[in-house]
Length: 62
Image (cartoon, rainbow, N blue to C red; front, side, top):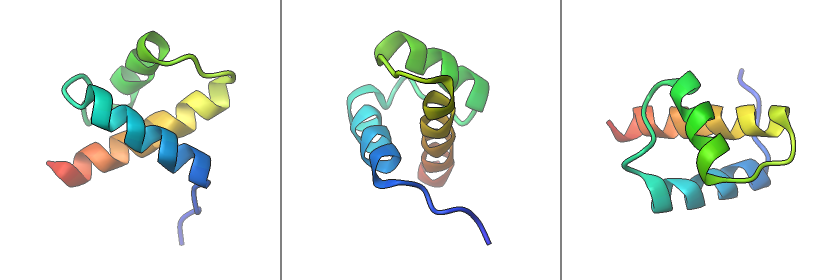
């Protein structure tokens, strides 16, 4: 079974996908770099978790 993601991660990721949907891809590394540019996230761990969730959602969309 997988881990359950926190509401903060899901909410932030969904807001960013709505704003910047055309920038995000299905590649985790690319999404990490894009997050550095478009959002100010306090920690590296939080950035990685949000990027992972965005990657997961972008794969579901396609």
